[in-house]
Length: 201
Image (cartoon, one colour):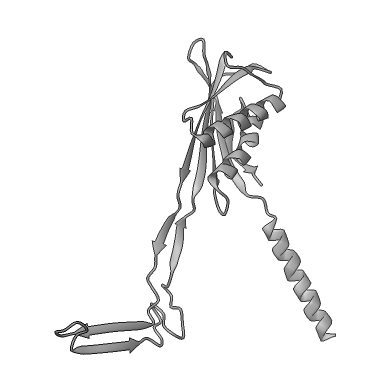
């Protein structure tokens, strides 16, 4: 009976951890509609930076637009401009765990007075028998990726729509996160959105 309880407990932990691992990564979308966007409009997609990543992202935008019924053309009246930014996360050093300290004083190469100190226990920085409260580094802010998007009328220069989306990079790379952000942004094209969460993966 005891073995059955242990087995059931282990299976429960396995399924809980599996459900947590499948939780989708999310991004945050904001958008402002200044003027109504005509239905089934023709759009020219233009990155502000022609890096390899942005050129690949341009194709992703064009595919997503076409799947939503928009026409993509180089001479289109409306220009969809996007800019990408990847911000690295900030780390804080909370101190180092010190186990052995070497000290040498006096003349000569090694010093006349040499001392080795073994730190067994230190509640603050840690030692042989404990890690301490301040040992190791920690993340202050996670790395994130941002896409700024706008639609302008080529004929008069007026802006019809503007949006920005932000997502934590986490264990993914910026390119994968940016590709996953595109469908959610295109879905809300021409709409006003405030702090809307998007499922990315």
